[in-house]
Image 1: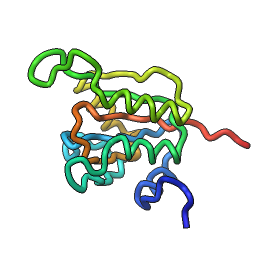
Image 2 (image 1 turned 135 degrees about the vertical axis):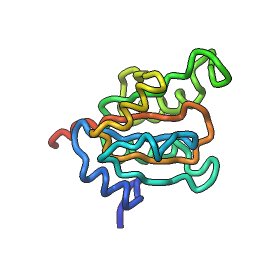
Image 3 (image 1 turned 60 degrees about the vertical axis):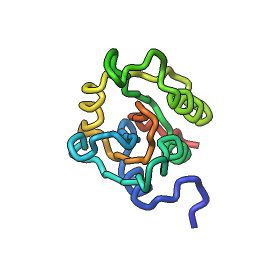
Amino acid sequence: MLNSKLLHPEILEALARAGHSSKILIADGNYPFSTQLGPNARHVSLNLMPGLVSATQALEAIVSAVPIEDAILMQPVASGPYALKEDPPIWADFRAILGDAGYVQPLNKLDRFAFFDAAKDANVALTIATGEQRLYANILLQIGVVFPK
């Protein structure tokens, strides 16, 4: 039996095959997975129904299993129906979860199409589809180093 927060066998396998500088995409229910998937990414669908599994739940599980070296968010568009005047509320949740895991750097941001390009890079080892309904709930993580004890 495993004694950790992360129990999903496919995700554990993908993380075990990944290494330092490999990337993990956790994406919301609006993300275009079929057209924006990296060539080496293991696609795991956790989108059971709207709201389940949430992006924050997926992030909490991931940070319990691997160190995070970098985190990138999808910057909201500047105009139109999906434009936001403030940071998306879920970003505060991402910051809190990452902070609790020891990540202290600012979260980086890429515009939508640059984010898509980064998320389908060959270094993306794992893409997790969530049922997250909040907008701009996409986060691209880079795995850090596990230091010897």
